[in-house]
Length: 442
Image (tube, rainbow, N blue to C red; front, side, top):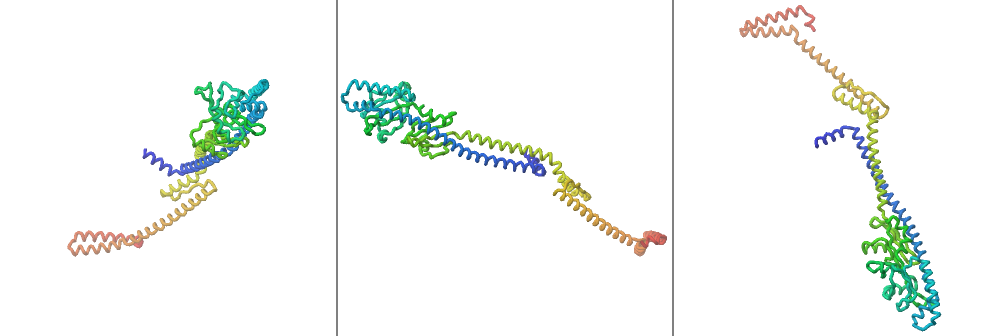
């Protein structure tokens, strides 16, 4: 495995075409990857800003719709609180005095008619109760099966929240007794206010109970598809309504301290305030879908980069036969020159930089070949001159004189047979030299 990898590595290192494709592939992937990442981040920031603006407007529209419903509730409470017959009846209950039976009957019938009209105008009301200043419920009230009749304990639970209100309507979320719930209690919305006469004297407490659908119907634009979260806080920053369970107290604190738009735990939260009722509406939407879309964009760009690399590789392979042909001719010419063929010339196929390199190669090989030929001829002439000089030294007269000298040395050493033989050879050379005088002179 290592040997195969080494061969592949060496093959890539020796191929200009493969290195060109590899380099361009890396450049394209980096370019597409970088562009995709920056596009992903830019789109994410842009989407967050745009969605924050749109979601803030939707949040304000939902709060405005809720304000209208709460104004309707305030109008209903005004109709009850400032009704003179209700004021007279509850004031008489507070005084424990005697009063005319006929007038009392007539006023009760008028109050019943008013309450029945309220039932028809506001079907979302689950209960309406009027307490005197001692916490005793008056005769005039109505309830539904979802909420049982309220007693003095509910009055005492509401009283601490209502004391600093100075007659304004206070909105609360408290559990109320219910016969339809398994645990006997049902979380309900309560709107309470002091009942004051025209002289601003308090004569009782009005408590109106509503189901949580009173808020959910107005906020359904923020909770469509089941992905939105809404948190409605009252004037005391107590949670009045929510369609999602809060995870911890820290999350409640973060939501209460939220200023306009903020991202928490992959959710975008926006906050709007109701100046009329001093309520704060916090709504959130998941950013997961946006991030998935942006991630899809990033993946598309990366896949586009990979496809571009494949297409580019195919185009390079197809075009390299023409574009890189001069370079291949130059490489083959260098290989021939390296093997000693200095008469090699390459064909010039273009007029660009590669053509200039090819012409330079041809001029170089031509000069090298000429220099080699000049050096070779010079050396060959010198060798011939040396050979002729040696031949001139070895002519027959020169050999005759040498053999004559050897003859006398042998003769003096009494080697007459060898001396006679050398004398015969010497005479033969002398006779040959005399018969070919021109050869001897050369």
